[in-house]
Structures are given as structure tokens and as C-alpha cells.
Length: 376
Image (cartoon, rainbow, N blue to C red; front, side):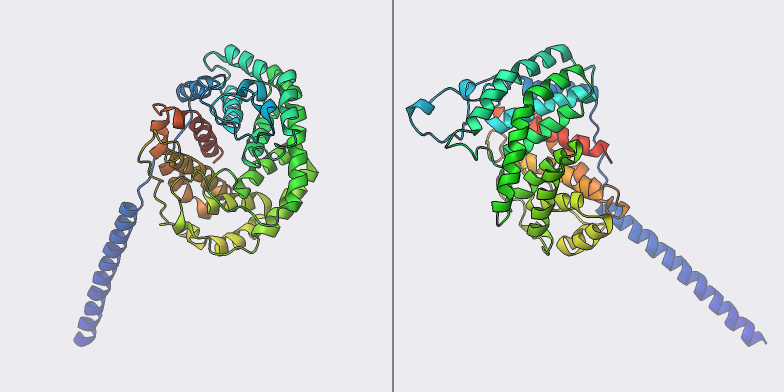
């Protein structure tokens, strides 16, 4: 009997020791995970930041030079100043940056009606996006040599601007929407005409990225209920991307990327697929995203006075809005929001002191990424 009692006591001691060791091991493991995954503060867009961000496009939407036209010349007759060629969108160095600079102001006014100089900003928007100016912009796209102008990056931002104006409950917005409508309609027509001809998507980290262009266009179509545009985008995107596997995130970013080819594609498919379909697809396309310890270093900018190198601030912002889109409504991907926060925190402080190379466009990327945080 004594032997049995001793044996039971020994087993009990071993069990207790084992339990203590297991608890210590679990505690150590938890400590290691918490040390490995640093949590980054959730960035928020407040009125103070909004006023600073509004200054960026305000300083350039009516500044004609320097200017990069990306124009195809047919003769000496085409040699005209930017403000003559593009009376609505001639500032901020290039057409697309001017367009999304106007988007920035609309977005900020919509979110912060008490923005400093709100009335002045509205007047500048009305002056630039006038009926006459938009007619001239439409005429430019009808020109023989510039029918593909800004395809599809500028097209996408024009529709994002149209969407933002459409959802802005303000008297100014109704005038702007009516004035912009002919150009909006033209860009929609160009998308529907172009997409069936595009046999292969452009999987790059710069302006011509197909997934980016389709995402913004789809957002517009969904918001205004344009079924033909939605159907066209959905068909081509699924043709392009539905069978993709193992996107090489380790190859990103390239030296002057401001978009992530892999994440742009993932965020587009999140828009188009059902929840179950998307989870199945993303597990094949980017299986590493489901790892709670997945890490993605921000793109490092070595020189913010270099117009191409500063693109990497843009990649941090665009990654953030795509990661937040992927995580939207899917708790198993919530850890991706921390990576998004990290990228925003890396690049946001710099854009307010940036030289013109970054300042003429990065504000829009910052605002859109901060908006994506608020949606989550």
C-alpha cells in the first residue's frame, strides 16, 4: 500500500512539474510572438492632418510648370501650353496627378466640411471643373493621336473623382458632377471598348497596372450602378487572374514601384468574388498572407528629391489600402492591418515636407490609404 501511495505521489509531482513547464513554455512562446510582431499605431485622419493634406494639391492644381504632358505631336499645331491643352487638369506636373489632386480636395471636403478655406476650395473646384473646361478635355481625347491618353491610370483616377463627387452630399457637388459627366461618360466608353481587346494584363508596379485600373473603375461602376462597366471588368479580370498561383511577393517592390502587382490583383479579386470564393483563391494566389506572423518590410526611400525613388512612399500607401481591402470582413486576415499601419506610419510624416517630386501626388495616396483604415 505504501508503495502505491509513493508511486501516486511521484506521478502527481511529475504531472505538476510537467504542467508548470508547459505553462512556462507557452508563456515563452507568447513572449516570442509578441516580440516578433510589433504592433503599429492605427493611423487616423483628423481635421489637423486634413488641412495639411489639402495644402498639397492647393499648391499645385493651378501651377502650370514644371509639366510632363505625355503628348503625341502630330504637327506644330499641337504645340500648345498645358493650360490650353488641359484647362481643367493642367497643374501638379501631369494630368493624372492633377485629377487625383482634385479628388483629394473633394474627399477632404466631404469628410471635413469645416476644412480651412472650404469656400475658397469649392470655388477653385468649380472654376477648374467648369463645363467649358471639360468640353476641352473631351476634345483632347477625341484627337487622332491621343485617344489612348492616360490609359488606364488616369482613366481610373478620373472615375474615382467622379465617384467621390457623386457621393458628396453638397450643392457644389451637383454642379461639378454635371460638368464632369461628359468626360466621365467618355472614360467609361473607353474602358468598355478597350477591355475586350486587352489579351494580357499588365502586371507592373507603375501607372499601367491593369488590376489597379480595373479596381477604381469597378468602384465607380458599383457606386453609380453602371452594370455594363461592372460586367466588362468582372469578365476580363476573371479571365486574367482567376487561375493565378503563388504570386512572387518576394520580388516586390521594384526600384520605382508605387503599386504592388500582387496586392493590387488580390484587392481587385476581393471586389469580384464571393467571400468563400475569395478565401479559396487567395490561399492559392498568396498563401503566406494567412500566416499571422507574415511580415512585409516597407519600401525604403533613399532620396525624396528623386521623382522615381520617392515612388516607394506610394507603394507603402497603396499596399496599405490593398491589405485593408483584403482584410475587410475577413477576421482571419486582421493581422494584415498591422502591416498596413506600419507602411503608412513609415511614409506619412515625410510627405508634408517633401519636395515637389513627391508633394505633387503623394497626398492623394496618403488620403486614400487613411480612408481605407477608417473603413476597417
